[in-house]
Length: 140
Image (cartoon, rainbow, N blue to C red; front, side, top):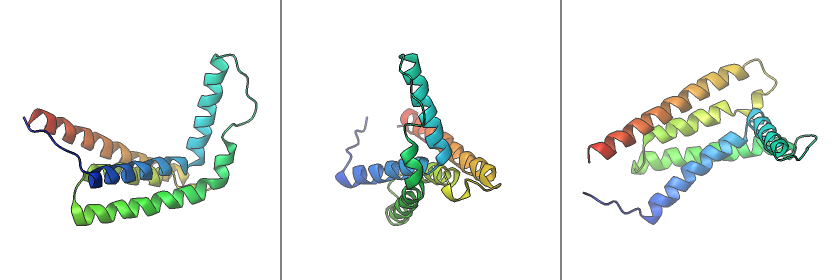
C-alpha cells in the first residue's frame, strides 16, 4: 500500500482553495442571513433570546469578501493550470459557491438564476470529487 506525504506547497494549495470557498460563501447576504437565523435558533434552544441579527455587520463587508474570494479563485485556477496538483472538481465546487454567492445581484431578479447555476456547479463538483476520491481509495 502506498503512503502519500503531503508537502508544504500542497498544504498551502489546499488551504488557498478552502479559503476561496469559505470567502465565497460569506459573500452572499442570504447565506449570512441563514447563518444568523441558525445562531438565533441554537441560542433559543439553550434559552437565550436574541433580538436582531447577530452577524448583520457581515452585510457591510459582503462585496469586499466576495472580491477576495474571486481573486483567490483566480490564483487557484492559475496554480491548477501550471501545476495540476489538485482535483479540478474542487475548482468546480469553489466556482459554483462563488457564483451562487454573487452579492451584486441581491436586489436583482437574476439572483435565483445565479443560485441555480452556482448551486448546480457546486453540487456537480462535490459529487464528482467524492466519486473520484472513492475510486482512488478502492483502486489503489
